[in-house]
Image 1 (cartoon, rainbow, N blue to C red):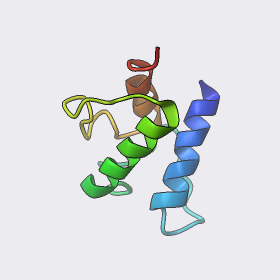
Image 2: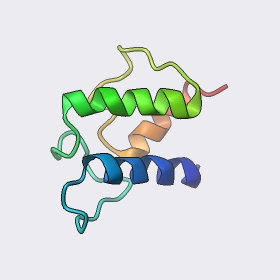
Image 3: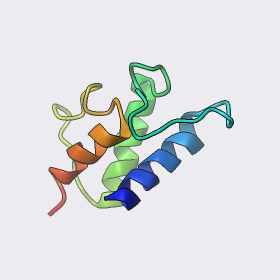
Image 4: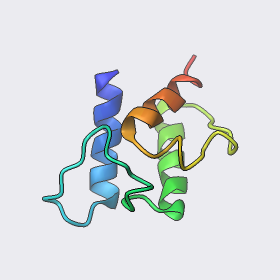
Length: 81
């Protein structure tokens, strides 16, 4: 579980943080905090689907479900066999 959180957190840091000194945690608001926008959320969803070999239905890929790393992990676990 921690490994999944770390993978997602590292991806968000690499792809979406402009200030590399900015620190984020598993509970940092990504969407409501302005780190990930709606376009970036689509690329994050695609990354997660490819990384974990899952398909996340669009109706489950809500801004609320993608707002923190912890919430993303909860979402992903619903689709991992």
